[in-house]
Image (tube, rainbow, N blue to C red; front, side, top):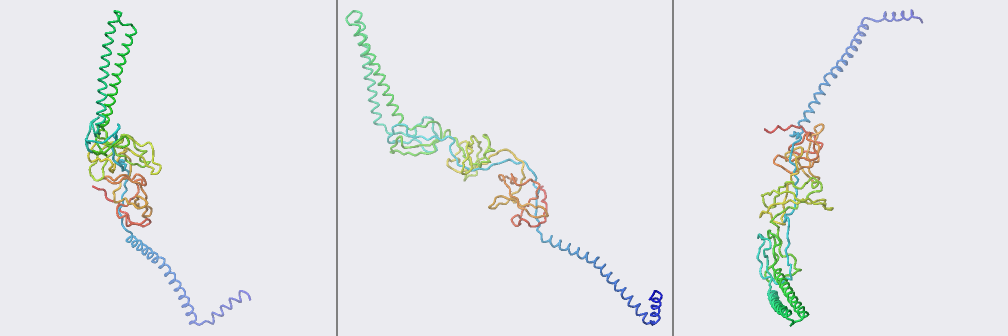
Length: 398
């Protein structure tokens, strides 16, 4: 079959179709075209309206999420010049404590002349010890002095008479020398007797317990009738010139930043009164167990400063640049102090910090913050790390 025969065959088929068949074929073709157009229209409508609905749904979801996220007030503290205060605790005591005991042979105490809290002069008698035996011995020694002096005078008189007779030839030169030796021995015995009397009187004087220097009587550990001696220990404790001090316990790092002369404010426990002092000595060693050292803060006398009492000290060690936060922003737990900051994607982050002493203007953060972070001001206890929030910057105080 060739091309001409094919054409002739199709033409013969068309010749056999009726008008109704032709109309039916056209309707089917139109229906197919209409269906395709409908499908295309539906797809186009989906692409247009479906995306809009999806975007609207996403916006609605985001709006709902924002409504669920809590709003928190934050601050950006920056850097502030603050006084660097180091807080320490310790015990009060005398700056120079003077223990006083028996320096002589001792005996029974007859009288105590002072009470704790009394001021005394150098050499003032604090307690007297019975001395009847020593007094009698001193009287005996005094009598020996008188006897020795009488012997010395007699020896001198005999020497003078012998010297006059030697010139006349009645006494030999050898007799005169013996008289001279006798006189010299008598004078020596006088000196010995006086020395013995002085020693006896010194022993009597040492029966008085005396203050070695001016100061304040802190303790008294002796009563009349008590027998004391060299092994009795300390009878009185005195603070020289009444000067006091606080032995402040400082961490190893804090002690390294201290210098002698730094000012300190000392507050004894149980009193609102504070006293100003200065560091006069720093411990040259560190306790290997506690990793602490001692800063000795000199204080002038006051009746509120009781030796043995407990006190706190705020030592000024210069100024530093540090973020300053209100107390509401700083929290603490078993791990230490921390703050909450709003980080990336407005999520809460925990930041461990080291803080200085609380002041009237806030709490300085000495380590852990640069000052550029958004720090949660309040409600930190109700937030958890990783939680999404809506931060609102706090208004500046007027």
